[in-house]
Amino acid sequence: MSGAQPKAAKIAGAVSITAEVDLSRITTRHRQGWVDIVTSDMGEVVEIAKKALAAGDNTAIAYHGNIVDLLEYLAEKEVKIDLLSDQTSCHVVYDGGYCPQGLSFAERTRLLAENRDRFRDLVNKSLRRHYQVIKKLSEQGSYFFDYGNAFLKAVFDAGVIEVARNGVDEKDGFIYPSYFEDLMGPIFDYGYGPFRWVCLSGKSEDLDRTDRAAMSCIDPERRAEDRDNYTWIRDAKKNNLVVGSQARILYSDAKGRTAIALKFNKLVRKGEIGPVMLGRDHHDPGGTDSPFRETANIKDGSNVCADMAVHCFAGNAARGMSMVALHNGGGTGIGKAINGGFGMVLDGSRQVDDILRSAMSWDVMGGVARRNWARNPNAMEVAMEYNRNNINGDQITIPFQADQSLVDRATEELFNNR
Image 1 (cartoon, rainbow, N blue to C red):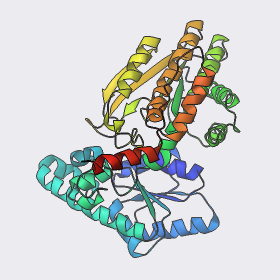
Image 2: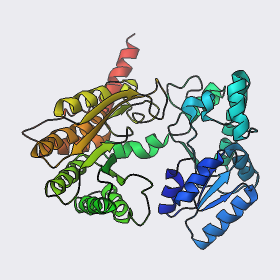
Image 3: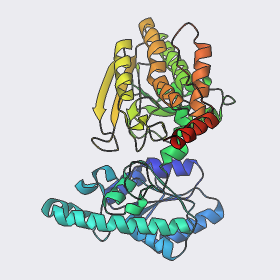
Image 4: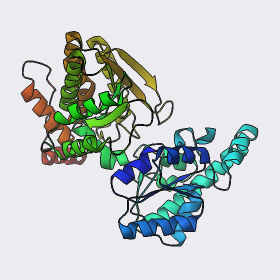
């Protein structure tokens, strides 16, 4: 159980139920204030949720138990679920990332150590049952999406061939959308992704100053994403998001990140705050190649290539980022993603200003360019705007848009003449 899901649902004004088999994870999130109510009674879960919905209370409920048990109960009672997803660690499904239905967390851990073959069989059986109840809930009106954690791939590997879109293999994706295709992909087309910073002084007042500085760099009228970002950072402190380091995360595009980073560095130079470390999630427009998640909405076939993250890594190194990394895995499993990450220390120097102007846009716009070449409309729009605003600098090649009717006619003539 991550705290992000119940916390995000609460901020969004929703009533959420998050299932977790490891009580220690729930206890931690409850202590941190990211979960409101904890229960292992499925009937109580439903009653609490119904009362909260009726009262309009945004409530985060943690169910201590197996998700398959809970979903089967909800399906049997025909409880209406608006949104349904799964963030189980299915990229390591046979190594403890998934707890089979019928086992407690302690039993799962023991069996994992003593009888891997038996554990694997139980995982596959549970995944098949998990899929069937999701299918039933979907038929009852729930909108299910794959989080991009290899859940549907694990279901397919467990023998549920029907989950594949083409009914044969996973190369064309699955019958349920990944949240990336439906939600995040269009946002990445614009270049928005999780931009992060840590106040190295450890002072909460420095974080407050960076919040205000970031907010001053956002025009909420520019795009819907900017309006959401403005609201997010405006309310960040009252939502009690800090649980350790004085750190913040904010979705921002290349233009926004550069402006915010330069503003932070200026504050450091003036002595108003201590040094700041910038970074981002691997889950970003240009830093990761992963066909089941980050590059899932690149539909020209290059979603399976692994060159974008390498270019991102190499460019960041050449431009002078403090730390660069090229690695595998990152939430989708070894062999399923290539990530190029960075860290940038803001020390207030003019040299850092120069690095930020060069590197921040490179880190993002490679992903926009890739999606633009795939003819994603939003990415093409952003690429053209970038070219207009950067006449004497880098330029992104805009793809030629063929007349589809001519392509169709040529294809037809080709086949007729064979």
